[in-house]
Image (cartoon, rainbow, N blue to C red; front, side, top):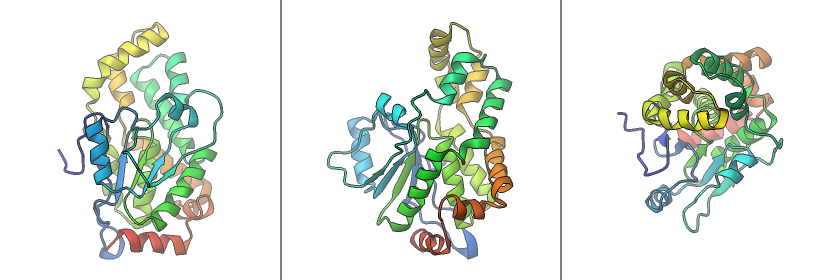
Length: 259
């Protein structure tokens, strides 16, 4: 198991996505960029460990409704910046709608996730949050943590965009993305999730389909990056045109994070 993974009592998929070789022979510092799933179930010990990281900013990529259903726990006296979305469409999360209305098979789950990733970078809430995140990374005097619900899709894409910006090799970017499959006990979680889905839908769900739905695959990230390039000409153009990451901010982020 990689030492990038940080074990908490009830904080899932927590890991460092720094400490990779970047452009021009430089390296992203470790202990500056963290990613995880939501913090609603964090134990007191988890909160103490979080406090020890001295986070300068937390970026919560969830919808307002998700945050209401599972409000974050933070260390007492937490003084870091909290970046959240106010874009609330009033509806349920798309993956919940899918799970309620479609039969969850491995192929159906993959099609849904691929279609989701095709649009992920262009959702107005994500554009707003991603933009604010990059500004925070360029300005924050300390570590930044990003998370969504499971810490794998919205979080995974934003981490990958950060790696691209800093010149991380594509192989390392994909390897980091795929660490969700090692960080989370997918097979162990699947039976409980399957029971919840059967209760919610009245339909049995295959174990293998749940495992596949809970994990990530390279094609998802490749789809997102390919669609970004198709619509903007390149990932660099998307970062500048959609997210406002111009040369000045790019250089500032590089100066803060790499050596």
